[in-house]
Image (cartoon, rainbow, N blue to C red):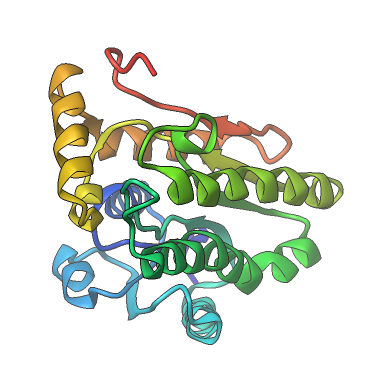
Length: 241
């Protein structure tokens, strides 16, 4: 068993997920990394890590990866339900299949991830659930209709989980970033929406680094178990909305 407890991250192959896996690994934690692009995770070469090809829509695959990692490194003490997708477009011209994909990954995927570790955390009366939302889970933006809906869902579920788990000393933290330098735009297929997003990003001087968000997550995790940062909302200084 490792000296420091195991942490698990979904969507660990890029962006904030990758940065968080790196930050916790550098801090001495064994890391379970889950994503569909296993080659990217393996190329990171993190010590005491386990990489598994997981689609968060597959509840059994998450549970199997968690069980395998816990057998090697002990119980998961923090899980980051980070995997998500942004299919942004005007609702009247968007393919409803994109709605289905966002709803399944951004909402059911979060619940599947939490489900894999929650009972163990309740038994141990210790643990931290970190749920990826967005500033779009606090505000509504044009061309973000269904995406905003999925992120508002994460906020609502976090409130419910927090109320339920508080008596068990399990922490629930929501991460609500604004414009970050990640691959999120790769998921946008609507030409006009993509152009508008890029133009707004340029106006605000670009996004901030994913590693900044990762360091905040690590800092919040390091607090005593009886201290909880309920939400991290991080944006570029020049992001005014």
